[in-house]
Picture 1 (cartoon, protein in one colour):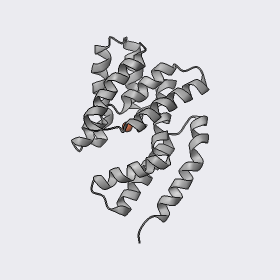
Picture 2: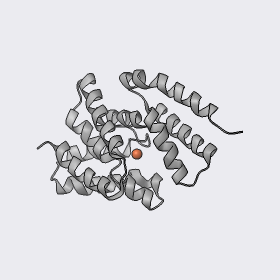
Picture 3: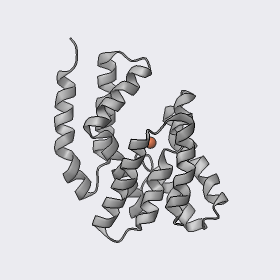
Picture 4: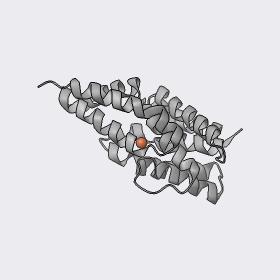
Length: 189
Ligand SMILES: [Fe+2]
C-alpha cells in the first residue's frame, strides 16, 4: 500500500467527522497534485499527493472551533502524529510537514512536492465551483452578500499569488480574471 493510500484513510476519517474539506475539494487537490507532478517530472508523485491529502486535514475541526486561520498549524500538528504512527522516516516527515506549513505561502517551499501541493490547492478555489462554495461558506460565517463576495475575491487573490508553476498559471490565469470580473460586477451598491 502506498503512503498516499495510508494517509488518504486518515484524511477521509477526518472529513467524515466534519465534512471539511468537502470531498470533491479534497479529490481535486490530490488529482491536480498528481497531474502537476507527472507533467513536471522530477517530483515524487506519491509524496506530492500525500502533501495535498495532509495540508487541510484539520480544516474541519479548525472551522468548527472558529479557528480557521489556525488550520495550517493544526493540520501540521496532526500530520506529525499521523506520520509517526505510520512509522514514516524523518526526511519524508519533514518534507510532508513543509507541504502543510507552506501551502498558504507562509513559509518557503523546501521541495518541489511542497510547491506542487500549494499550486494544486489553487485549483480548488480558482474554479466556478470554488467561488460558489467559498461564497456559501462566507454566508454561513455570517457575512452579507457584498462581504461574502469580498471574501471570495480575497481567496481568489491569495491563490492567484501562490501560482508559481507554469502549467498551473496557464490553466488558471484566464479563469482567475474572468471570475474576478464577475465578482466585481455582482456587488450590490
Ligand atoms: Fe488550507
